[in-house]
Length: 403
Image 1: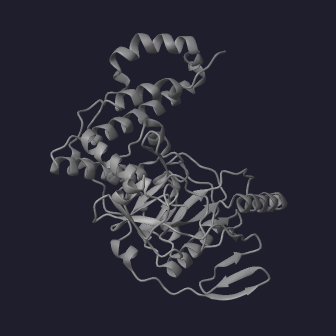
Image 2 (image 1 turned 60 degrees about the vertical axis):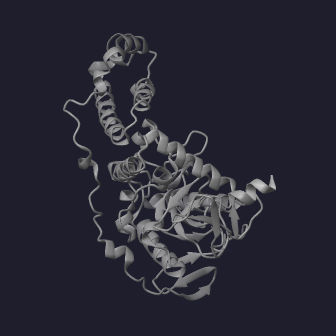
């Protein structure tokens, strides 16, 4: 029988309709509502007595005859609530938590290829390697989008949490040898690719891969922002911590062991103390990844809604606005929305609130503001050392004169 997934049929039409909704809050509501309805359709079609609905020809006939003209499947049953409903609630962890001083953590000893730190962290160093020295430039959000500033090269600005997307076995005793083999093969591969600074395997063992003083090839096209700086291309500026696991849909529980969480908490604490990293700059790959060819976020979606922030000792950073949306006019489609969880929708909603408020203040439409913000990104991106020769301060005028 020729079968087709409901999402394969419905997602393109949902995206097409969403692209015509200019108001970002209305778009967020529409995508959220549509995702729930598609999930309901998938549940119904999964029941044995509805086998006939899984036939491709019947699907297309019913769809084009009934659903396309009206799209009633994706119309909310009740009127849309006012925008105020989507203002994200305060994070579960008090603000003071992120701002409280960190306890000092120091290296106790290095013995037999293992570092022992004062907070109980153990780091295996036998796979450690080097890469290009860290060197990065940032945009001061208080200045026009026409210059970049070089920050101290060895001072990491944040942490990006990843998943390895590697083969997983059940975490059971009789598979110990197999689990060890998979974990160490993974670390060896990460070493060859210079992919992360740290990998945490299924047993909670922490392996250093790339030296902290160097860049790692982990984030690709990426954006994050704190209260002062906007970071573009986080390979250089952020440390990478990857958990041996696979991506799960946003609200599904992650496949991580308690040992991994415990090790992740100790490692995060050490890195934050050592480099004075703000809690708000500890984020997931899904929050920072972008596609610059179409100005959509979420090119990578690992940890798109189920990262254990609080268990790691951090506030729930999913509620934070995304710098890519707020500062540079990026957007998102239904594919990304479906991959995320309700926790990350808070960050999307708060980002869209800020965009709408700025557009109103400047007497612009949302589309006009996004065009301006995207042009700002293009200007700043063109100034990065990978596109031009590095300088401590570099301006648009300097770049134009050199051409």
